Image (cartoon, rainbow, N blue to C red; front, side):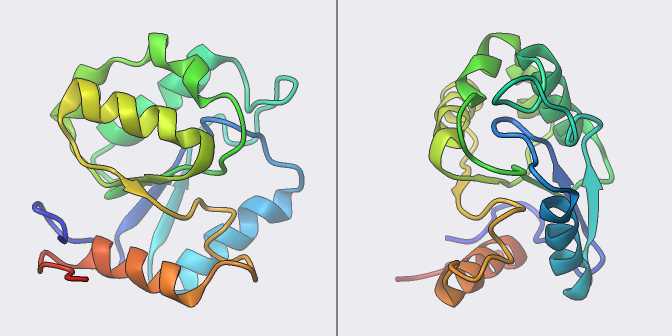
Length: 162
């Protein structure tokens, strides 16, 4: 089924927190931003998207703040994780789920981001999308079917079907 709220419209904004792995090269970030821009969308990066603390994108408290900031930002229409990897479960104790519940938006990510999908669903009853991150929307190994399905899910309120 498509979105029950408002669909992502041309010119809309994708908010990108980094809940798990950090970036390795600035080009990892820039290619994803360019991918969305080529399709007529804006990207708003969280303040910590370039952070790094060992194998994660900064301290768990700061990653949780960035996630909540993307949900509470009125300019952001969709929240898409920067990357998957390890570390998103570390954020859960620091997330104010009332902020997310009060600002429902599509949330995208996969792999370790599943910890956030499960906790957002548990604490807010919001439906989230297991799908591409900013680093995988442009990746050569990401299937066209995956991208097409993501875009249909984000841009329509019509039932998606099988």
